[in-house]
Image (cartoon, rainbow, N blue to C red):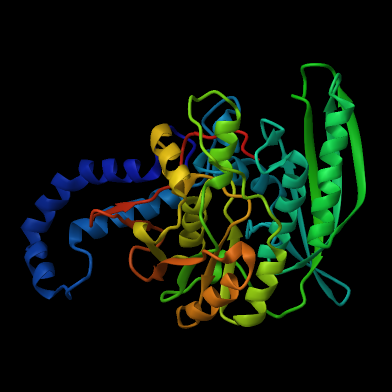
Length: 401
């Protein structure tokens, strides 16, 4: 990934155009183009298409490097800039086999037990929004990061950064929401910390959490395990949370009957794992939305992903608001939805398991994993065309979690 304003697809295409004339001259001289066209099996990329894909892959393999001198909001958006920051600064510094997969939780062997450990920080604005607040969002998000890693969530920590002058009544409400969310998810908050900073330095309240869970099965879940023929499934309508947060800020003259989908998915995920041995990977579709997850899968597994736009469940209110904002719902965050990669032969079982839970009643197969175009996510549009779904560079929806 790169941290520049242009993305790697544009960079690769530009590089392709710069070399096209020279390559064609060489091909004509050797008679290579005619021979290749005559011998190429039907359905395989043409010479020009393959050259573009090869250059895209080379651009992706370049060592990540942050070119900005200062951190920007884009570095927290979950897209290209976030990935570059993580890989160029944090992964380089802390590199080890447990961290390198960059999954939602690390898998640890402690004695004879297999544990999962995750951490997250919540800076959502506003703190209170339709469907929840920063407190239940923090609990649910941490529980979900453990659950999609295949673990049964058990224990959480909670660290608070409070701004001088923040209302005690608001803090009490937030903590009460955390208590209720933890009880609903079957976890306990067992340790924590509190810091207070000067007025104007923390925007009210930030929350940091960590979570520990136990892995009680032998599945090796992860984005890198996806295989051609696998099905791509979402557990329900996407984008509810991100659009709800944007509307709750009151900066847009848009009204919609919409609430955040924040919820703990561990019960639904336990049912899925019990019913479907062919689950390859799961991710909760938070920052960067479904599009970011699919790009991560494509790169980690070296596969292509093809998604059908008509199959992606999106509420009418979310689609309408996203269109007014100029945002694709595939990039909008959810806080109670997962993306699952499942053996294609078990997609029906997976849908049945998800739909048996209230959170998964609208689960849908939205695409498949392919051997073609490795590292690329393609969207078949409702108009019959196909386009590349890349990682976002900018940050259209800052501070949504």
